[in-house]
Image (cartoon, rainbow, N blue to C red):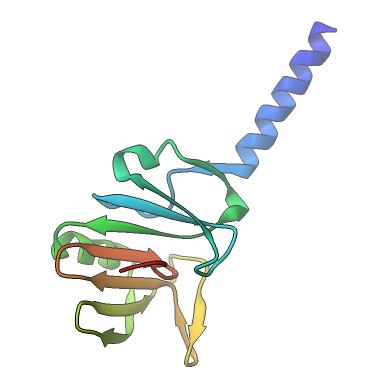
Length: 139
């Protein structure tokens, strides 16, 4: 009986190892926000300090996007550079500046006006935020 329980336990660990991930795909310095189950503002949104994000576990197929914060433009632009991101277009408002990019290093994307987009870069005067495929909520 003990061998049977042990085999079930090992099988469960193997299944979890294949289907569960943690920490996200991009890293920042401030908050790390995970968008789960939906690639829109209807996603379940979980925000943690970056230093705790490595301990956030989720089912691999449930992660539909994420965003990270930076306190300097140089570090945010370095992430875009590390991802080989290509500029697509930008938009501005009174309190924000957004730029949209595409990277072949990120599998998922959305199409806007016929363009593939999978990185959203935003600056609101205090914090630089990079999200994939978009930053949901306020930016």
